[in-house]
Length: 236
Ligand code: SAH
Ligand code: DHB
Ligand code: MG
Image 1: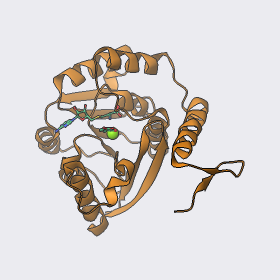
Image 2 (image 1 turned 135 degrees about the vertical axis):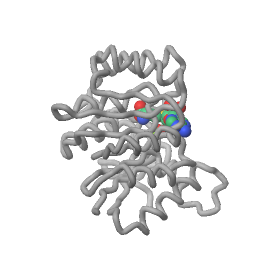
Image 3 (image 1 turned 90 degrees about the vertical axis):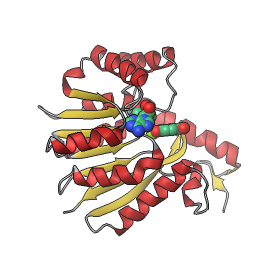
Image 4 (image 1 turned 90 degrees about the horizontal axis):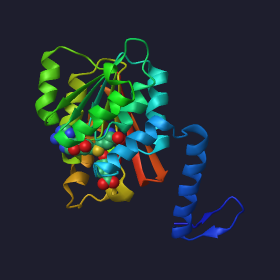
């Protein structure tokens, strides 16, 4: 692989590249996704409750926010709430009457998220359901609800099942986003013993083979390392 050059044309080591990517992420993040009292309060509450710091980054949150502004979903489904940081980015962009159903397995995470959403004044737009997503999804299906945007960000071994449910719960024009699909490049290893990687690879095979879906990947580098989003649209 050819070495990367910085803006000034210098050849950079891997370490310096990563530092540069992080600085660029901060530069754009500070400009386009600046933190505010609400978001700071969420991250502080998550830290105080010792939740893992695996929320999306500010710019990734803003990506979801812009996606909501672009697609104007009335119904959003999120699988994997944690403390509600990504939920808040999406909820803030919802059109009039828009709602988010968010699924969280861990009762402690759900409790922190509920408090965070309440403090942010967004709980009226959010339906937080506690339990294994694979138990909650059939219930949603029986409620005959269709979602315009689905964000999958929970246990990665279940990504194939989550994609199946996303298809069942969507309609033509719906958007499906999946977080953490690159994982430092580990996704390209067909021999990976990691259930996370196997789950994500299996999901991509399904995505690639399904004529109802048109999909791509947006790779991310920055404050959360090297990772990426799958981005798909339901055609029919
Ligand atoms: N979307 C959040 C981060 C989610 S982290 C954000 O960006 O702010 C992944 C979350 O999925 C964790 O809170 C974890 O408890 C939850 N999770 C793991 N397995 C799950 C399951 N089977 N069903 C529902 N949620 C699950
Ligand atoms: C990690 C990051 C995530 O965004 C996630 O959803 C799960 C795990 C991680 O860095 O371990
Ligand atoms: Mg994630």
